[in-house]
Image (cartoon, rainbow, N blue to C red; front, side, top):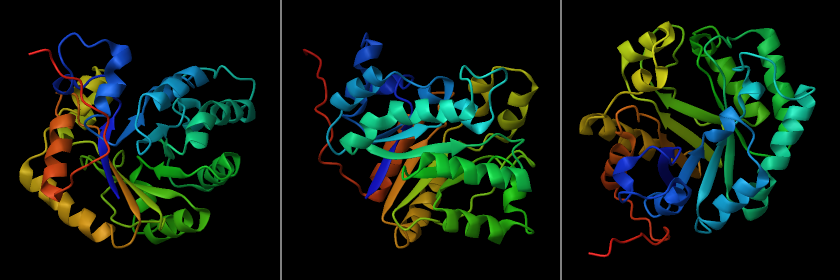
Length: 282
């Protein structure tokens, strides 16, 4: 199965009829795509009632990729609102339990920051995180190039395979040590994640200088020839992994939804179990 979707469901104006309330957007989103990344978890661990609402609003076949809370991946700039990391992980696991029980959890994505480089203490922390998550499927995405340097490339992939991490394969600007190359290597026979961030090299670097990073970093629209590259990549990857999740994150200019639908067409996919689409009166 190839699941294609977007990172979040709130900011994709081309999907929604005018005036649609924010609380109704997920249900309409699920009429277009079979999966979504719940990026709100990055900013705060969500109340279980939110999770139960999202489960209720989506078809049985819909799958959620939940982004790990920023305190779990070292992104936080201040103190975390928990007494310990153990309490923080326990709160996260309790929150996602309805996803697990419903069968709608695809995986939890641990995306580490650009300063999380390949060193012994970081490898130790990855092992600690994996142990805390127990049997929950977890994906790993790096942002520091050292993990895929010639010295560590093979060891990184072997570590992810041995430890049971799902590889989050990225398409992103090649902009120095704060970005990683596209490494087409599944580390899990059941699932592989692909996240497409765009290829705006200027925006990727400029975003670190204090501008509105969300408006700059992911401003990119994939051309058809670039998406056809990914058609070929996906055709190869699907011979090595059972389910592939593809998430478009290039939405600074509202391009993610259009590019995702374009890739669905190029792959010849027709999803038959989406949510019913809301229709205008006329």
